[in-house]
Length: 306
Image 1 (tube, rainbow, N blue to C red):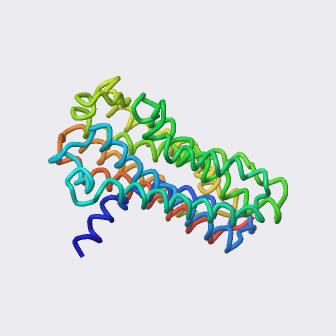
Image 2: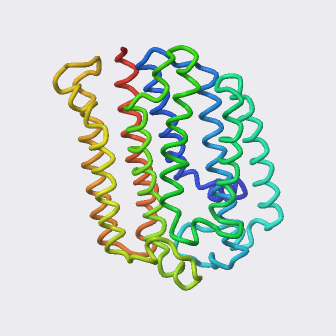
Image 3: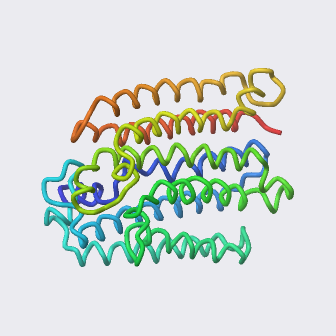
């Protein structure tokens, strides 16, 4: 059981709502448009989760090689740093999961078309380039931008696309899809902000220039708060439609923004008043807020319909 726990920590399961939320909200939008398909939806779920696990494991491996993670770190235990996992084992498992994820991506081509192949290749490169390569994104203050694109825009837009384009042509890139992708992007960025906020001292010492290292804790906390409110505001057309009864979404759809903003504000207060290991629960809490928002909205989409 201890080995299982070590690998679970390595995969960073608490952060997986970041990748899952984008896929779920895209499937919900497709259901709302009565155009969802089971097989491509499931493939997108598996692809997104595997891609994030690969990215998480690659991040741990390359942070170990660079000496960024040290034994006894403030954040969650890192198996390879503490000697629980051999570096070569982690590297090989990461590579195997990347190959598996690419195979899942190839299964989506019949639904999305061959033009999606370069998209999949780009995603695979990002999973590694986030922490490795000649210009690792997370080491140059670009981690949040990468999360916004690859855990917000990409999963929402392309999951929706493979569901809708053969059933309801013309709805593939509906404005709500773009707004929803940005909403998920901002919420996902907040999960990374918590991680970098907690690790700012260790990152600064290791020469890892995250956005929090560059701008400081106070601007990062302010950005965290603003991101959540901007994320909700982007979907104002949905909230307004539910309020006025001008679309098919039930009034209780408004529970999504209300509950999320309450939980988000509480999380921001905790972020602003805690340091070190006390911030560890907030990482999963921020991901939980995001997933709960997505689940409520998914349920509203499921009960609605164009």
